[in-house]
Image (cartoon, rainbow, N blue to C red; front, side, top):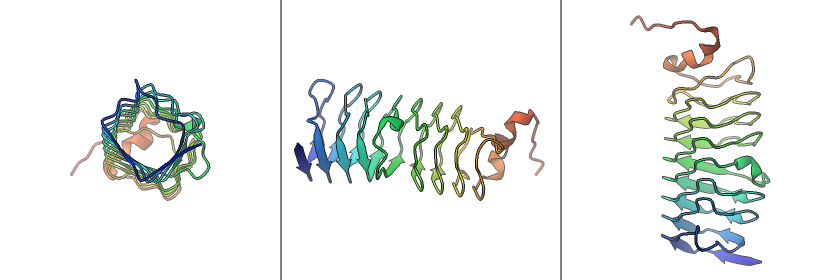
Length: 191
């Protein structure tokens, strides 16, 4: 099996040239195009993806162990297809719209400055995760564990406290409407 350590991959088009299956440790991927690529069975350990396009990439049994994504386009990904063992992820300034985290365990994950429109978090464990300045328009939370999660600076979320575990989660007063949306009530700020 191919093993690559400490290598930087820059401006490569993996839609035309396939990333060799194997293990990648301490590698950096800068401005690479992985859109619609098959990354199945590849193991990424302590890697960083920056300014990459991973939209619609296939992730069947892909291992993501302490992987950071910055300024990436990641539309329509199925994170639930990844190998969950040891999965640790962080996201910053990325667009993950229409992606799915169905039943994935992502405790203490950082989601910073993200577009998470229409993302599926059904059955996900997001205990202690931080959603910092994220747009959660039409994101699905159903049977989701968001205990101790921080949503104070995020917006456009709608989640039902009766259908999710939210104990000790943090929300801002501005976002309270997102917890009460199902009651079809109007909330005004009289300050």
